[in-house]
Image (tube, rainbow, N blue to C red; front, top):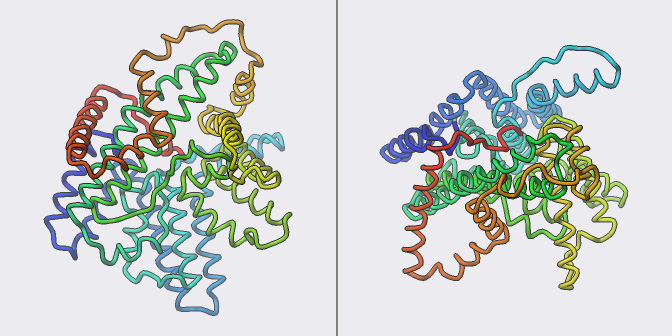
Length: 466
């Protein structure tokens, strides 16, 4: 079930809110758990048992780790291996079979294993819980249904943000809903819905037109058009989902961490990963990079730790040659920036401009690895960005790709990506007239978004496939 679907907007969400607030406080976690199970079962009921197994394994694992201190390392290793085993089987087994066949010229059959929605997110959440119990940072949750709520909470179940248990444990036990928090959540949800439906979906149609062309006829300007539009598309698609997740959580009294901080303002690729998909980056830092030794070791080992951490970030996105390429690209680029000092923020305006120009192709390549249909296509497409292997003229004119409304959407996407609207909110938030105009605008955006949903069949969420 998509947040941007008619079923969710007009049936599931209103009913959940009404039932949640009609019942006393002590029943509200149960309402959210039932709603989360229904939400997940609506799309993939066949994988409910997998989620239940994940919950039970980590519930028992945490209790055993806490009780049998002498064997807690072994128990931790077993629980993590089961979690990783679930993820590896559904996400990476077919890819490993393909790699084995290609390397050794064998013909083992691909299993065609379906990828459960959200597994990359809720498995990482489960691992963070079990590790935090092992470290003694939290006590194990004795209530099975409360742990189940943490792992399956529907606002962030399918595409994050990845929530660490110690950040939300107190809120599961005791949180205070308020009209102010609900109103904040509603506004945030509408903004995210508009970003997804009005901006990301529109730009996605442009990107698809470029990708659907035969690779040999794509020109340099068309290749850049595809890369730039996809950068804005995925930012507003994934960022819009994160807005909706933060908003939905607030509507039920939860306050969760942000997942984005204007990543296009980054001056280095290292900084980009502090601003983009923040919950994934911080998870990898806390549970992989620091346990490996972080920067508290010799330089060579430090660079190795960096490479492995950023390689895993790339590979987390999927089991394809492109994602392996993204992992290597991440690791090598971050290590090179550390070696050269490029990751340090410049204090010279000219250097700032140079860093911004550097980030355009760097991010373009990174994003295209996510979008490209396969590695063979990537190898042919990327050289076109610098004019290699392009025809003398384009097959289509500008008008084929976008009209005046699309140009306006790209302009709005650009302004939003550099924080123009956020700064405006800061300046005007105390003005009564502004607040009235803001609410009118939000209602208008909601109407436009619902109209777009009703009229269009193009409504994917990009990060669902990761």
